[in-house]
Length: 592
Image 1 (cartoon, one colour):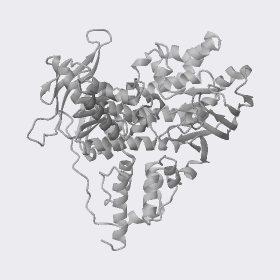
Image 2: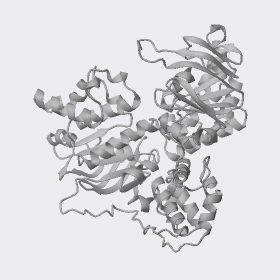
Image 3: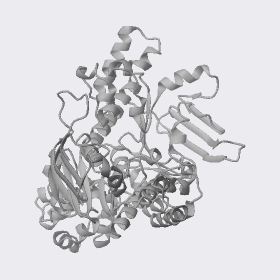
Image 4: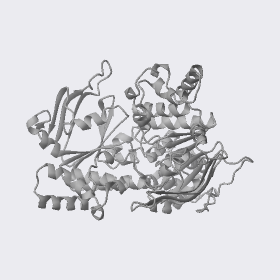
């Protein structure tokens, strides 16, 4: 169905920089489900845009059902054959009613009204959104919006759909919805090309293509690709957590299969089964899992007052109008100096609304927000000082970049603090050094940077104001594994070395578990849980019900614990579970 022959592509104005595509030759058969992986800048999105003629190769040929994509005579047929779904569904939704949005494509193809009506109903049914046909798209969750975007593409009757990181900004429930829809469509014969940074999603595909520096470097089934752990690491990628665990155990000497992809496969491995079949007298290390689901139970361990106090906070959007909506309801929360706290919740749970109260971007409908002992709503004169204390990095931090050079962008905040030129320079240099951007970046345009570098530059712009509290809204969303790890390592450094109080908003349960000692869970605008990762993730069933998840290692620990009580139920990292399993192995060998 799709064939590329030695295609090259370079963006205009790149000069001596590497080409985005360097001789890609591949083919995809009708009905295949192919995942495309690669670090940011590897050429994945550039390749995707060649498949429906949004871009044309500077050298080589792309064939879609035997038609050259550079032929204007076949352009609209090609674009109807290959539909595109992008990362942010908001960029594809243009109507004020769901069914009108889905009808937009067929209307522009000149399809008769009665046939459009039937098509819209059919496609909304396929993606499970029939009951929302009359809803306004902006009132939907992220996962629901993405399903509407997919329905709009399906209404064009494509035989292939290319999805460019469609779940990057979604919560776990939204990701599950979209992946389930994709699998259903593939089962019905539609060719799927999924670009993703989530290795667990790629494991659902029947074939995985790995790109690196504009070239295809691996092309096999998921087992064939993910079993090459060192190779994937060299290409700045990762493997599913359970695969990484199996690799770690193999490196330690256990004869575990190297191509494990799922929790079920790991639990069924012969070596693991034999090891867990032996009784062990290890006591369970599981913690007491009782968690208050009311006001914040976390007691201030210091004699001083908490750095952040939130008292009976409620926020109502469009209060008094027909669009009135309660986003937060009676939130009580204390955060101490030097803490690193993860704030998690489904899309629409109130996370972003809550953090925008911390530096006065939103005003409480009821209640108080107290920062370092000051009520931020008492006297506007205090607000400027509060905003210097609380640095807020938004979900798309690259949207905070606007100056002509990185140095000027980072200097913007300090310049408005009334500092001298020497002080501004010191603030800028220290901030850029902290995020790992050296002098070679100072005069570059922010828009020349990679996705991960843009995130770091945006964080530097906040750090340059020397805040004591750093709030980050999904700072790693959309980044490849290497970029994600770099950003999270920088955040950990700022917390541990610089002493910043950090609030991390994330949809990644693994990141929340690895980085923080305390997790706050919001659900429908209310505080549901507040406790350690062990205590919060012990509530697996409830978290799943509200659209969240637990780390894959927690799922696996629970599964293995059913086979042997020596496996604690409060493990949520690869290293923790590997250490426990190796401990059992050494005990079998008589080694204490």
